[in-house]
Image (cartoon, rainbow, N blue to C red; front, side, top):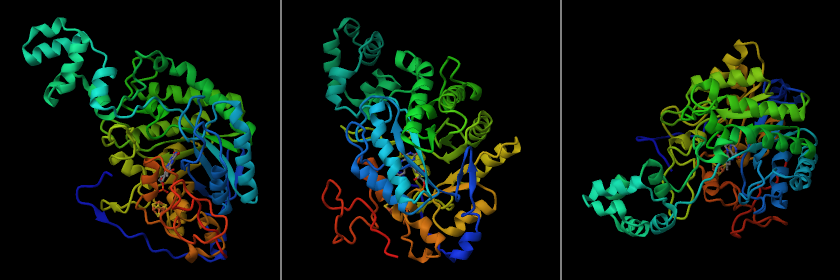
Amino acid sequence: MWKFASPIRHQIPEAHWPSAEEAAQSQLFKPIRLGPLMLEARTWVPAMVPWRATEDGFVTQANLDWYRRFAAGQPAALVVEATGIRDIPSGPLLRIGHDRFIPGLRKLVDTVREASGGHTKLFIQVIDFLTVKRRPEREKYFERFLRITDRHRKALVENTGDSHWLNADDEELRAFLKEAPDETVYSVLDERELESLRFGYRERVMDTHLSQIRELPEVLPGIFANAAERAREAGFDGVELHYAHAYTMAGFLSALNNRNDRYGGARENRVRLPLEVYSAVRERVGRDYVVGVRFLADEVIEGGNRIADAVYFGVEFAKAGFDFLSISKGGKFEDAQQPKVGQAVYPYTGQSGYECMPTTLSDEIGPFGRNVPLVAAIKRAVNAVGFATPVIATGGITTFEQADGILERGEADIVGLARQALADPDWFLKVKLGRGEQIRRCTYTNYCEALDQAHRQVTCKLWDRVELDEPEIAWADDGRRRLLAPKWKR
Ligand SMILES: Cc1cc2nc3c(=O)[nH]c(=O)nc-3n(C[C@H](O)[C@H](O)[C@H](O)COP(=O)(O)O)c2cc1C
Ligand code: SF4
């Protein structure tokens, strides 16, 4: 895990919980309009992948149980994990790339409606991602993956002073490079090839020499629209287009996107496809359906987007007609740590990953409400051009005062609690009922995130080994952890 040079250990903030009457008077429990529908409060559980779908992307009983558990706490809005829009294998992550996924998703919607007593609106985050391969063994990389070209031959001649490499056959080159010292390899491979060797091959939106990448602007609007139509058919209250973190749409928005067609370079070009995708989705689902977006306030990588870019995108998204703007930060491949051989690079291991899910081992600012000034800047800009599009702040929000203060000061319109809701899905109901002192407080040390990184079923360290004598516990694959938080015994 990435760490600051001189980290400071922060305590989780003390909390003074409101009485039920105080909660009822607070901003937090005031309704808010989200496009065509009303949320009954300003509380939100952002998307969290729990690694519980089938290998081929279907909703499982464990998915239903996971969302039922969140719904029991009655957040005003709950966003279902990043769900793939293509009909391609992607491991145990939910998919919405074909009509065969609709019945399972419909069951999920019904489960949440019933468990929340209709208090929780349900959205689904829809995602596209590009190919990321596992880090190869060195031998395999040189034997099979590297495409030998004349550039390699010339570089070898230069490096060794031996001109026979110009006419040597591929097999001889492969055998030589496989055994060659690192300095030689570094001088012969280009930057992308070295990255493929050290981290695993990874596509970028700028790889326009590949037809499937060049054609993304023609293809993506349609498949996002199909996914949104399926979401509506399954009964979701709306869709959240995933334009954040390390995935395709964030790649288009990124300042690193230097595609030389109309979709790269200047901000106006980088936002073009995200807006075209939005238009296609809107046209398909109609004006009376919630379509929101999650994007980054800051990519937190060298040469990446900063807050000025995010402000520009926020205003463009509001003008286009998105019903909400959910703001995240970081979570990029560019600064991720090198994975072990056989594993894929994980975009939450560098500084940008820290900023996405900040822990208590932090700098002087600490992890709590760390993104709020950036969110407030986006909201101010959106409001200044005459739009009231609700803006959602997430990142280290854990106490009532913090959440309500953000709303009182007008820094955001809705507050998102991800890890705190995982630690205690009943946070929302406990605060509303004046029972805040019973909340299980997240410690922000990212045991859950490490499980996500290892592609293991996500649980929370505060509850996955407690009350194991409860009847009908669902167990994780490792047989040692319960999969759900214990029921709140009021
Ligand atoms: C286990 C886990 C899975 C996550 N999966 C997603 C995801 O699917 N989509 C997304 O936009 N963010 C995802 N996130 C990020 C959260 O939505 C949230 O932005 C982040 O955890 C910071 O908020 P917090 O401090 O309230 O936890 C995930 C976070 C965790 C801990
Ligand atoms: S595992 Fe740790 S960081 Fe994750 S929700 Fe639980 S207490 Fe919070």
